[in-house]
Amino acid sequence: MNNLATVQPAQTDTDLMQQYLREILLSPVYQAAVETPLDAMTKLSQRLGHNVLLKREDKQPVYSFKLRGAFHKLHKVKQHSPDASVVCASAGNHAQGVALSASKLGLNATIVMPITTPEIKVAAVKALGGNVVLHGTAFDEANSYAINLANTEGALYIPPFDDCDVIAGQGTVAKELLSQHNQLNAVFIPVGGGGLLAGMAVYIKAIQPNVRVIGVEPEDAACLKAAMAAGSPVTLERVGLFADGVAVKRIGTENFNLAKRFCDEVVTVSSDEICAAIKDIFDDLRAVAEPAGALALAGLKKYSQQLKNSTLTKPQQFAAVLSGANLNFDTLRYVSERCELGEKKEAVFAVTIPEEKGSFRRFCQTLGGRAITEFNYRYASDNKAHIFVGIKLRHGQQELNTVTKLLSDAGYTYLDLSDDELAKLHVRHMVGGMPPRLLQEQVYQFNFPEYPGALMNFLNTLGEHWNITLFHYRNHGAATGDVLAGFEAASHNDIAAYLDKLGYQYQLVSGNKAYKTFLTAN
Image 1 (tube, helix red, strand yellow):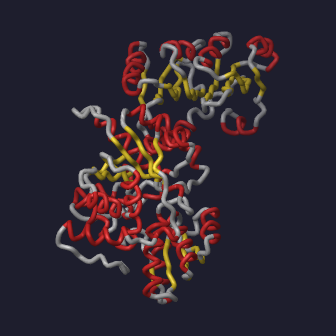
Image 2 (cartoon, rainbow, N blue to C red; image 1 turned 90 degrees about the vertical axis):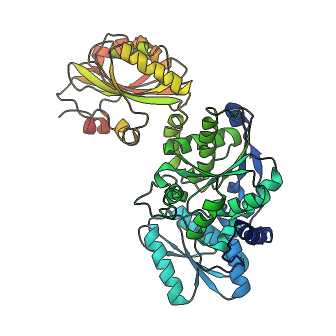
Image 3 (cartoon, rainbow, N blue to C red; image 1 turned 90 degrees about the horizontal axis):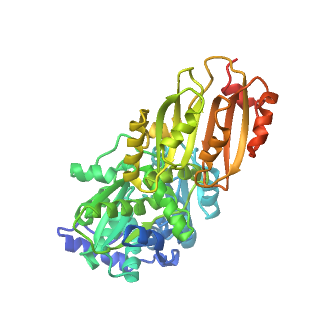
């Protein structure tokens, strides 16, 4: 590490805390960063029964806490070597933090980014004054190139997290937090490489040791949890990339040294739980967090649920760090698809139903009026059909147990796919395909007003007059429901009079090229 801070190896926790405390208290980060608000999440607090507060690091000029550590580090560089050049590797928040800090301090900064980095992020770094070099297809390649570049050109490499100066800069988040609320019971902090956790934990335990410090990681990138179990940093074989801001295979050495001393607990969460937390933040604060930014809140929610099973009944004062909001807009499609599953407000099933008239309607009746959020089906044989169905749940696991009992009692063969990642990510969009024989089929798009029970009403209106050969429906919360449905009929004229009587808006799409390519037998 290229440490320029006064932090030195210490024998005791007290010595270590005092050294970091001095750095944090005297940090010059506010020459570039701002003190961010601590916002109350009223709706979520009411739901959880605890007071939930969110530290809004998305309010920084670069929309991330990373500016703090970068500026603290570069300020030390400027003091020691006014004409120094710096180099870092990053595809995201660290890059922007270094670029802005260097610009503020008059330093030359080169940012190495993978060639796969979205243009919007490259443009953001350039706009902040960084000299961008594109190299490699992944971060590891870019990082190796950056280190070599620093060595060959005599520049200083700026690590993203495993550095005492960077850690001290990140610790200023805790300094603000405890001055904004000094009666906290626990603070939840996202963990990637561990810089933010390390800096905040050492400060919190120095000032208010009774406050629990809880690190939060994705289940598929839990490098701190693995290190805690092993007693030292370990390298994960692979990490999930959904929360790319914390997709780190190995926690920093100094970061782990501080975490094992001052972090009380590590909580891991799923991608669905992160999506649910993104939605909670939007619902309460109308802010859009990146997946890594919502990680800490997801951990807070999971921890609060665990408290329900304990003897603790007194409402707690909880704070979580919203670490960033540099979100690729396309990610929102995935988030909207998965947030209900993360809240246990939706379940998805594969169910086998008889291939006969009225089978859809009888299946919906079995569910007792519960809202269907998704219905994917394609004719497969003359005897049975496999459907992929989403069901709205109002009472979480308890209602899910009721639904599975209803299906069992009705004699349906089914699989609960709510925790099957492959099914949720891919299979749900690939249900069906081409029928085993050429059908005389007419395909239509229907629109109907969306309200509780709307799909059931639609099916009741269709009745059992025609054999349905294709059906797809997905409720996205819009005011209008949209259904793609196929009927076994020789021509539109055979069925047109009946469809007109239904009273729903529809259009014939049997000539659609995509339908003919992927969903018909030739």
